[in-house]
Length: 363
Image 1 (cartoon, helix red, strand yellow):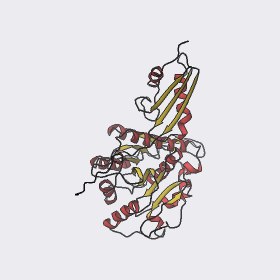
Image 2: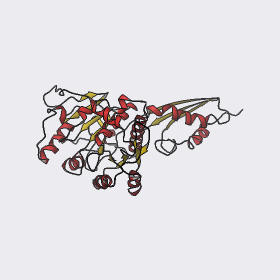
Image 3: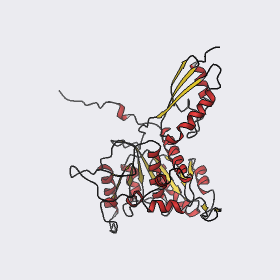
Image 4: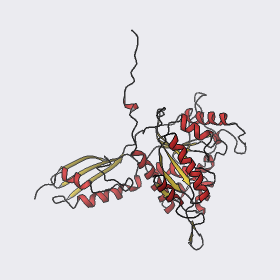
């Protein structure tokens, strides 16, 4: 019986689609190595995004196809990932110790943006990445409460801050530095300066992703983020309601103007599920997120239900991804995280770090 060739295996992999990207593994440049020894085939896959919870599913997809090849009896598949730094706004360079900054924004308040941001960060961590979250909502910081973290950050040199830790992710917020009851009566310049300091003076430790939870709207903080902070991509959170979609569109257009790629849209509170009878009702309308995604040629990353447990869990400092890791809602958050990171993996990479710095000296 003739032995199978590595080329035949590669051709077969061209028919197997990565479910998070929608392209085959060869087109995604994820196939790193193919070894054939007699009737045994070894395949090494390296993704550009974390996918811990889908490793087995992907291995099964590949195995089912390759095992059908004549002459193959044993298939060994290794699936890993390597997260790289991606390009940012033309005038900026990526930050040291942070490979990618992902902004989570909404046009208006009350759409569940902060809840989505913290669960997105925790889901990326659960999928196998090193993650941080920056609470950029200076007037209404909510991440300390949502992560169940209290106390003040330490400073070893009196200038920089050590990030706080919550559920395995690094976090920084103005909420760690002031009393929870203290109102922030600051003008715009003070707010933007505070945001820059929180980002630049925190000793982030080798992050794959820093999720930035932005305040609602398109004001000072968003402008500072767009002009001074290197952002690899943005995620827009909306509800299906027309009024929320109007404002979400403004946020999306703002990122387009400042050349920050919009990775996709998350439709929150898409359907209410009755806790008593299970009846589903679209309280805020239907299809808004899908329409917005189609009209603006961006991806709908996922739809989340209006579920009382999501609110209760973040209020208690144990977000859904942590408190109910095997629930359907956690599955959706992890799917959103994988799609967000996969979309980012498809963007152009930043190669500045790979080139040596050239110093010209007069001798």
